[in-house]
Length: 103
Image (cartoon, rainbow, N blue to C red; front, side, top):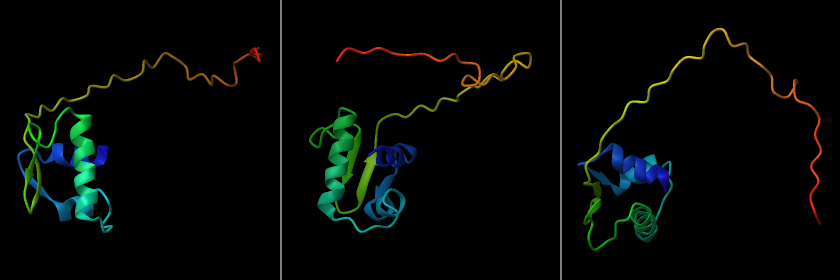
């Protein structure tokens, strides 16, 4: 389901054909029209959309689906580790412990 949503969001504003979905999300496996519709319905439910309003994912009948909501891209910033901190193996330096659980 996430792969399908990602495909639609990455192609926002462009209609993604059912054949392209089969090739990208399902690696070319054959899926029936009803199976694709079912997956689209699941994606819509997960993001708060439905087939009537189609506020986020619009159906282009006979062709495919289009993600129509505004998409904002954010860049992740990663900070390097400080060079002064030595790498510590948590398993090698851990003390044995026992957990007591009631039956």
